[in-house]
Image (tube, rainbow, N blue to C red; front, top):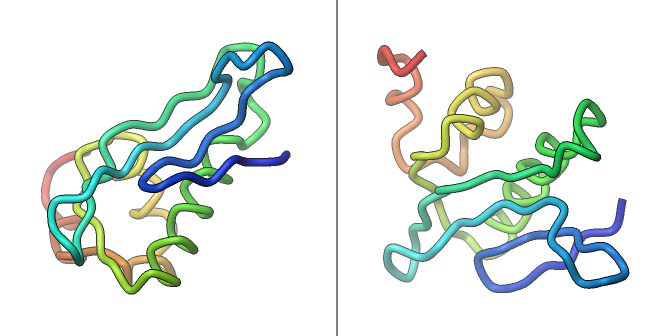
Length: 100
């Protein structure tokens, strides 16, 4: 799937311009973002799109030398399942807390 990369947002839109999937990570400061939202339209459900978006956000954060705070429940779950990506987290030990 092709994603559009913008500052602090990665998305996929249909031909009509409607957003069908996105992850938002607004800046807190120059070196930190907050992953606040992951959305996948029901028409794309079950295809692993949210995981692809989150992995793309990790790539973006690594390339821009930024770290992330997590407030999105999906992102929290994804990072718990992908310890190899936790290097981009502001506080990786926060995943061990009871946010399950």
